[in-house]
Image (cartoon, rainbow, N blue to C red; front, side):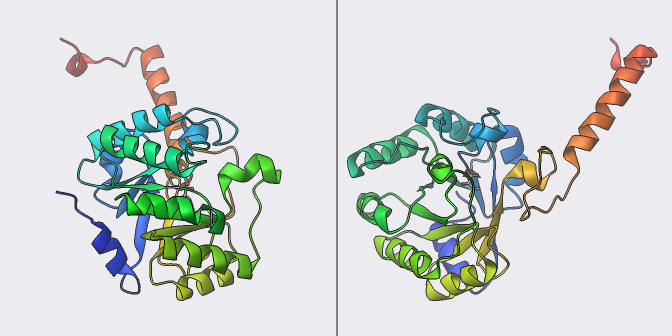
Length: 258
Ligand code: KIV
């Protein structure tokens, strides 16, 4: 049985804050599962896991592989499959790929980026029994077209996008890179939960990329990230001790030997 259902997510609005975190493998999914409402197998894995410059080259096969791993590590978690760039350019393609996500993994829902222009595709998925999470504001899959990651400030457009997605039937919307006071207004205008990332505190929940949250990604720190662990530093310190112990013939000791 899943610990969290769509019903629980919808009911949380106005009652308690929702927590979502990315995971890309079984090991970390298992660690995160007891603490979060939702696990997002984000296409950010293309940067974090595969070391690419942006998310655009992630493929359906890669996303499925990682979602299967997350499912194995956290079988009872509410898991969201992030539809990669190019996998939902038409209603038919979107449905075929969402069906793959359902058939080939334990994903409970899919997420796709886009506002008003994406609403007919989302409505098509919802009508065919797919649970969809929306994603508006800063859309990382638009990074090449927009020439960078740009915070969004056009309230009229954002409200129009959010409204269109709610009407299309999404159960929640990620608000990314949106001025805090605008995100608060969008959140108030909807009856479904908003999950913010770089969208201030007045949203219905928060999501972060796990390696930002735990300090494993250190090339730069986006303004919206708070590190709850200095993961990279801890790894370096542990490996220094490991190397030292080997050099000084302290590892393995009698207790680690047969
Ligand atoms: O891919 C991802 O990790 C995401 C989150 C940043 C919301 O879409």
